[in-house]
Length: 286
Image 1 (cartoon, rainbow, N blue to C red):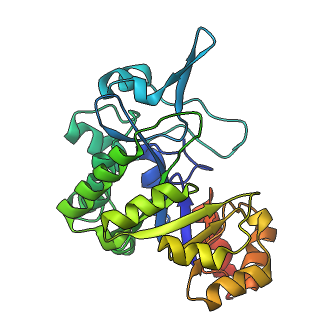
Image 2 (image 1 turned 90 degrees about the horizontal axis):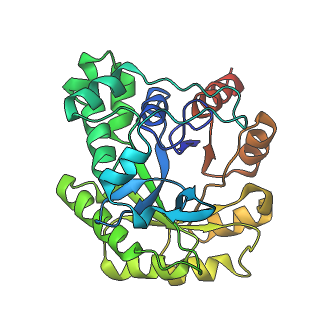
């Protein structure tokens, strides 16, 4: 079973932070899902919401900030959320060492470049010097980066700039085979296909489930189907897999959901608790 950490390990550390990435890597995930936005000066950053903040009751969009301004705004640990009682606002030793080496705040908003560097450093000598074990590093060397691009009809987001940023990073590190571009937006996936990035493509769906997901996947050139779990059933999962596609629903955080997904034979699970999921899977084999 493929284990995907949602925004790193959002149930254990603030999502999309360096600390969350480290926690997920320590759990030996197979992939990490993260969300991308782009700043006014063209920096691709790990940030879930299109809105960076509310200022005087109005939305302040990520795309209206420069990278420096955005990082100045978020210069301290993100507050713990009541949605995840197990979440702790603390950074691990590798995060602290990486931030010191880069000269950045360990709680700064990471860029896409930071993400690629973080994974590379974790899997190498620097990670070993910070106590990372060989099994953790071996998983990190094979880690898939699942990069989500959002598009809201009411906003003109520069998603082409995000795709260009992904293309640059993947090419420089020769990691295209370890990258998946995912989106709800068919136009974004079509553009990614036209750009011939060499990455995988993942189609996200929610309550607006597709009438014919197999035909849509073929049209878009996607290989990974990522439905909201509440909208998936066993027949649909098997139909999509029979057509040669992988199925990885989101976001499953309870053993009851994991058991159902396993019984359906899905290829992977996206979860906020990758360590807990891994332990649960091990317990099922005893």
